[in-house]
Image (cartoon, rainbow, N blue to C red):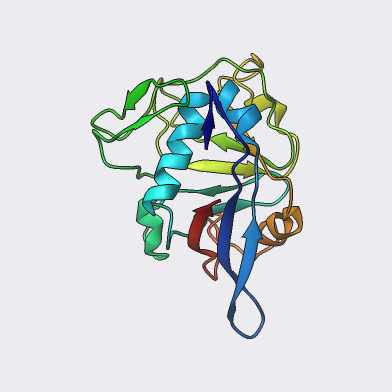
Length: 204
């Protein structure tokens, strides 16, 4: 799907199980974004996501942090066990590598982290996918969040707070499902009481 130095649009589709009153039902979560925009502008971060998705890394994980009128966080491998108290602290294996559209090989450090990519000024608008990190340099790995409101204070170029979270994609369909997830019942740690499970992520 690479054309020259960039990629033609790829359409990731998130297939979820959402909690309902009677059962946990399968539901499609179409989450397409345009790598023509994001992979060109954010090749390190977007290619990391694509590599992990293609490897099946995200399959079976749960949204471990859901805060209404803020964001939905996902991507910790420890969240595969919905009862795990340390969900939100994990990442991909260290040492793995992937290639950006420009041909650069990126190798994750021993903690599974990738280099910070503070380049394109893409704001944390509603529906955008943004890289989670610990606040320390180069601490992003597999976790990301979907903004449900405009969280511009999280922009890496906004100096009003120390937070720096680069955007690498945006929901173009299925925002109704995002908002449905944001309304699920959560416990005191913002974890959904009934797990919201990612069955699989496929990229066309």
